[in-house]
Image 1 (cartoon, helix red, strand yellow):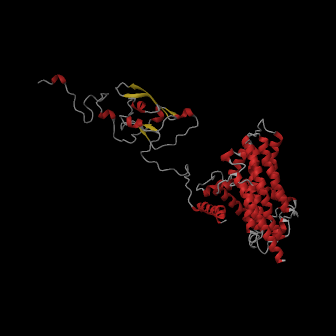
Image 2: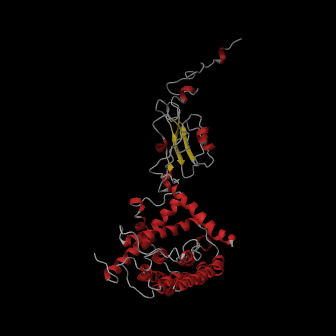
Length: 318
Length: 179
């Protein structure tokens, strides 16, 4: 089977694999969390509980899909579609392997950042359309969180872009042949990691959901497959952020020749997915004003400083 | 600055490492239906009615268990056969109310009612939690293998007159006690 960039079969394969992986992450996350909490997790359905996802999907598809009478119907239905769409669109610019990818955009990094910003609309619209006080609180928090992390998320990537001299993600990968950018851009990597957690609304930054405080935040009123789309969308965001970190800082598909490039990519991205799940198991959630303070007063200056020093070094070397 | 780095970075890394280290600890989970727990012989579980070594019902329908029961889950009615033996006409335990306290077993004068180590008593229909005498009676002596109430008691039944019980003195004829 010959894959080439942008061919129909490649696009179909990427779409299918990404969605299946995101659904399987439901099982992976539960098993890993239980591993770190000294439990066993779901191990009953199928081999090691692998069919748990199928059972969950059957359940979620056959559930009553209820729209509250007080909700704004159009926006209510639109919101979960937005998050799935923008995250799946973001995968379009990710170079998975030398021959696997959808497009080679010269604006790859900017496209991903733009889509991430649009994803925040999904959360805010869901919270607004639900007409529920918890959902509204979740939407408010999502807005507060978005304006604080989007800024340093973009700036933290500029160091990598400056080193590679391109916004094209494929060229960023190719320019890492001599060394991964995680070493010269370690601070940028840490900042992007933190911003990535906030972007995908994962613990410790799942402030818009915060089950313990505001029940489920923006998706309190959602049920059935609309809730499922938020749920799978969150895991898609996790896969996306892990892929982005792999591409930008860890050399993408590059690795020793005894494994094919796509396997190297999967290993690296899978490692980051596991790391994100470990973060969820270990670190408690801050208040959202703490996240804003931390973002504006600490991470933004540090990322600007990082960009400044990177630029100075690049200029002095030339 | 050091304080800030310590608070924001070092403590988080330490936390992450300590949680990660739990991956190498054996899980606490007991996989229950596959892995049965050891049940102690004196465990207070499902209630049974035992029989004496001759295969007759031990229960004499004295109602002491029903009186002792703090949740009033035992109901029974006494009746008598032609030999003079007392036995319950019906004996009903509502296990949806039973709290497995074991007071009935302590109250029982004939060791008839006993608690066993069986705890798997879940039912789909609530009415199935009510057990009748046929469900409660077992074909055995339970914890006390040799005990037979009518053989040691002074009660007269068919085939056993007054004074014929185990360790029982002959009845005293009060009219023969002349000075």
